[in-house]
Length: 64
Ligand code: FES
Image (cartoon, rainbow, N blue to C red):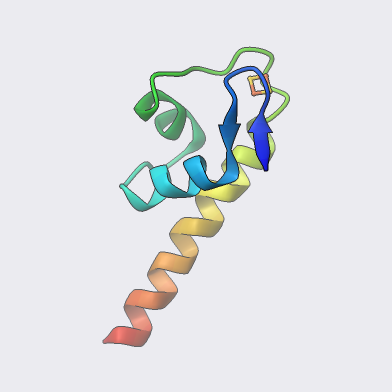
């Protein structure tokens, strides 16, 4: 699913950036060589980064 139509960024791309260590949507977009343009995707992108990072933390806790 495309989240950002300005940069053609998919949900998978944002979640992958979060797993690589990007802590927010700005960092995730920058890691893909992009920036917000219209920013209509910003809230959803932030949610996806936070959700992915939270899932990573949950997985790490269960592995301990
Ligand atoms: S839809 Fe993402 S910057 Fe416009």
